[in-house]
Length: 441
Image: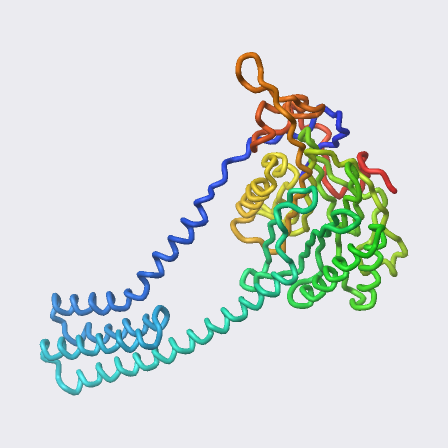
């Protein structure tokens, strides 16, 4: 992936394309289609029994077709409950008896067919009862997982402090709906603070570690004035509770005062900073630090970076499940280029388009936990003066839509935010070079 080094005055940022309109009705339509299909499934066993009976009536083959009536209750075990299976079996038995008498099937042979049909019906009813029990257990487990996820990753409101926020999270264990990625954003007396991290490993141990990190962060974010002190609290807690091979990569950020964003990167993927002018740049740590839980092994402490964060700027934090997602050609997903294509002044629409493109890149399902958190400092609404022609002319601030080379009205929609320019000067996050926009505190 690539992004351009942006020095606020660099006229060559990546030029994003217009954001496609969000298909708000698509999820509802996708839900409606499976619902219509599942409504037909319970009737399918009855249709099979009727088809077998019609074939027997038309062909008059007698014993050749009658044993196929058992296919009805056998299939009903996967589509109906025990009562439905018994009803299908009874219907098939009555039809079998009538057809056997009509075709002149000998009594012993007809009794054997009907006995086999009853046996299949009873076995299918038992299988249906066991399937229903497993489904209820799975539903209970999923509800517990959802409750755990709601407690662990509390829903982030659309507005936190001075920021507009959007979040997208996908767990690799789709049935469990919970994973080892973590995020939190809180408003504290020391400003808005947030964390995005990734726990080594998967499953319940990773979930437990994520819960530990988030609990310590939410407590320390309120207590500690210094952002580095918050990170130290998390480090000490993990040092006491984690094993030697466990660790957590994380980015902790804070907004203590207007125009200043503090960032502490502990072995995590560099966030992507989107300037109001449209430039995208990776916030590389000036002094790389080890992940949380490994400081004792390396002896290196993380450093605090302070970035200018003005109105209209955005910050995207993510986990490696996004950047390491591969398509069939084993190509990584180009996150920076995707962000440049879809960035707009509505964080929710930006992440919806970005997440959709990510799923299309991997073919529909991610193989690792993936989290995206987009933070935007909204631009203040400027008063508008009526022009001599009766229209309205924007009173723009320096660096606004016109100054940035954006088309008129781009600030209110999801049209291209960056000026036309070359893609030169791009680089891949994580190449180890420090971000020129950041300074170490």
